Amino acid sequence: MSDHKNTFAYIGNRSKKRTGCGFGICRYHAEAGQLEPIKSVFHEISVGATCLDSKRNILYCTNEIETHPGYASGGGGQVYAFAIDPETGDLTEINHQPSYATLPCSVAVDGAGKYLIATNHSGHTPITKSVKDASGKYRIVLEFDDATTILYPLNDDGSIGDPCDIYKHSGKGPLPVQTHPHPHSVMMSPSGNLFAVCDKGSDQIFFFRINRETSKLEICGDEGYPSIPGSSPRYSVFHPRGPYFYMNHENKAVIRAFRYDEEGKLEPICTVNALPDDCEDHLLMQSDIKIHPSGKYLYDLIRGINAVSVFEIKEETGEIEKIQTVTLDGTGPRGCAICPDGRFLHIAALTSKDVLVWAIGKDGKLSPTGQKIGQPNPGNVTFFSV
Image 1 (tube, rainbow, N blue to C red):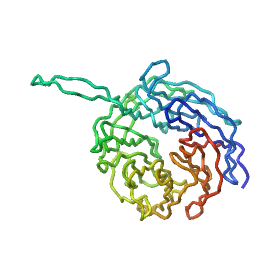
Image 2: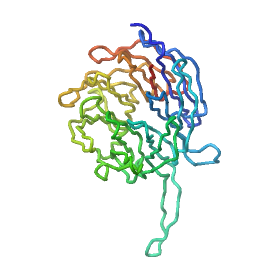
Image 3: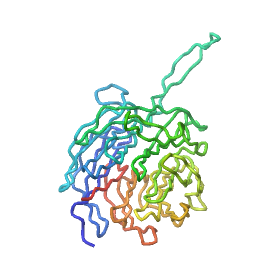
Image 4: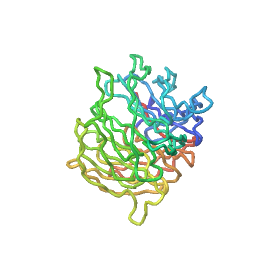
């Protein structure tokens, strides 16, 4: 197999204090799955998440910060649009907008390329207020930053317009850390019309549609779908062809499989343990989740044991079965991407500060290549191919 000259990988870096790190741009060599570093850019951005508009050669990302540039404290993060040079892979900023809340952590473009959706995770630091109740007694009330899903219109050149709708999440879960909502990820369905938002704080999954006449977000069924109490739904993924939806969790190491329809209705299929049989889920945390382009295999990153679990998908039913768990040669796996030809899994290991390359066999199982490249603080990987 010959190299694809114009395939690039964008590695999103983020500092622990969320003060920047920027993008590492790599040329991708398909034969060995090799990433060849070209340059690093936009170091002021703490890249929380990215999404691609391949029709217009545009990369969108979140600047996952709490303090907006120009503020002494607070003010929230930003969302950016970048034009991709298909010959060199270089990025040129088109524009950026405030995220209107703190820690924007995920972003998606609708199928028509008319709207951008982002989620704002919200921080953990409250403000303290004193409130007098109806009996005249004072009590302490803790308030947190808004946790939101925000809708932006996109202009013809891909630039991000002023927001046209903001949905404010509510609710909390049973765990001490679930004091308020934490919408963590947004994922677009293959149709481009349905968007799944996982809320770690309230243990819910929300399905949104865009009303294109009013430019507003609409919640399917007018409410969220409850998940396992205390599980903290984290990332989700839609099957590329079948009506199946999969979700992992921050506080419970299981994958849940559902059948879905375009009205946002969910029907549970199965719940499968993501850990090896001899491993307990104490202090473990799932991170990214991806489905192979063939639709036959699912890959789930697990921090704590620094591993990837591989599942076979039964396309007739959507059921999954764990077929492998591998221990990585890096620590803190946070994000991953499967290369365009489906032969390699590239894993952003945040703690060990490198991107790992694992080969994907015909049976979906992983094997190490020994390849890795260093990066400041890699959290996600996005491929772009012409």
